[in-house]
Amino acid sequence: MLTKIAGVCGVLIATAAMAQSAVRAQTLYTMDGEPITDGVVVINAEGKITAVGPAASTPIPDRITVHECAFAMPGLIDVRSTAGLSGMYNVDHDQDVLETSSPIQPELRAFDAYNPREPLVGYLRSFGVTTVHTGHAPGKLITGQTVIVKTRGDTIDDAVVTPDFAVTATLGSSATEGGGKSPGTRGKQISMLREELFKAQAYARKHSGASTADEAEEEGEDGEEKKDKSPPARDLKLEALASVLAGDTPLIITANKMQDIASALRLGDEFGITVWIDSAAEGHLMAEELAAAGNPVLLRPAMGRYVGEAANGTLETAKIFTEAGVTFGMQTGYEAYVPKVRVILFEAGVAVGLGGLDQEAAMRLITITAASILGLEDRVGSIAVGKDGDIAMYDGDPFEYTTHCVGTLIEGAFFPGEQDYVIGYPGAGGPMQR
View 1 (cartoon, rainbow, N blue to C red):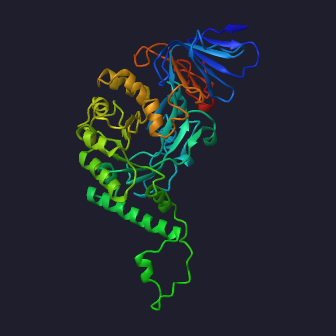
View 2: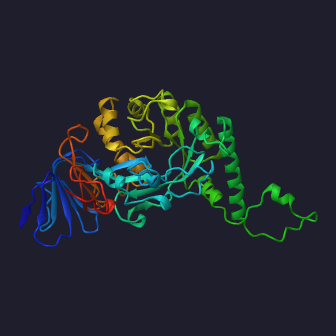
C-alpha cells in the first residue's frame, strides 16, 4: 500500500524497500515527441528509464516511490559553466577558475579542480540542472581542459561523465591583460596560438614516427639516419593541443567581438580543427557565417552584463540564431564579479520573455540540443526508454517567475528542489534540509 507524504512534490513512498522510482506529471515534456498530459516515467534500480507514456496506459509497478508534480521535463543541461571551480561564496578559497601564472596552459584539467561538494553545485541542481559542462574561466589565451559532470556525488568519480572534453581559449581584451608573457594585442594572440599549434603538430609527428623535411636534414651527410629514434619526452601542454589537431578534442574559443569571432573561425580553417565559439556577444551580426561554419556556438547568458566587449549584444540573439539555422546551446558562463555562475533555467526564461524565443525551442536548447552538442544524446536530454532517469520537476510552467522546482531526479535518485534546499555540507551528496 502506498502512503502519501505531505510536501510540494507530493512524494508517494512504498511501505517496503524501494528498488525503483517513478514520476507522474500533469504535463510531461519528453523532448522525444509531443507533450503528454498526465504522463508517467518509470525508472529502474540502475537509474535507467524503462517506461514513458500516459498514466492510463503506463502502469506504475507496486512498491516504488512515485513523485508527483505539475510539470516535468528532462534534467537541464548547461553547455558551458565554471560551477565546481567557481564557488558559492566568491572568496579566494573556493575560486579555482583561472590560473594566471602563464597565458597558455592547455594541460590544466578541470577534472583535477572540480569540487562536487561545492554548495553551488547543489544550488544549481535544486533548480533542475542535472548535467554541467564546466571548466576554467576565460581570461587567458589558453586556460585549460573542461569536464562534463552530473550534479551529484561526493567525489569527482561519482560525478564525472566525460573527464577531458575540450580545450578552452580566449580572444579579446581580457586575454591581453595580466602583463608578463600575456599577449598585448589581438595580432599577438593569434600569433601565439598558431605557434603553439605548429609545435603540437611537430610533437604529434615525432610521437607517431613520421619524418619531416627538417628532420631529414638532420640525418648524416652519407644519408645514414640518426641512431636515436626515440620519441620526445612527454609534454602535457603539447599532448592536449595534439588531441585538438587530431580532431579528438574541440577547441572552445571565447570571443565576443566580430573580429575575434572571425579570427577564431579562420584559425579553425587553417589547422583543420574543430573550433566552437563561446559567448559570441556580437554573434547576431555574423549569424550567416556561424551557420555556414556548422560548429556549435555556446551562447552567452541572456542576463550577462552588456558592457565592454559585450556592449553590442542583444537579448534576441537566441531567436536570431534559431531563425538563421546556427547550431547553438545556451550557457551560464562566467563573470569575474558576482554572481559568476548563473542558473540556466532563468537564462532560458529571459530569452523567451524578453528575447522573443519560442518557449519549446528554449526548452530544447537546455535539454536535447545541449545533449547533442556535448555528444550525450544517447544518455540525457530527453525522456525516453533506455536513457538516464534525469528529470526536473516543477509546480508550474518552468519559465514563470512564480514557479518552483519541487525536486530533481538524477538517475532515479531524488534531490530536493529550491524551496527545500539549504546551502551547506554535505553539499552535492545530499544537502541539509529544513
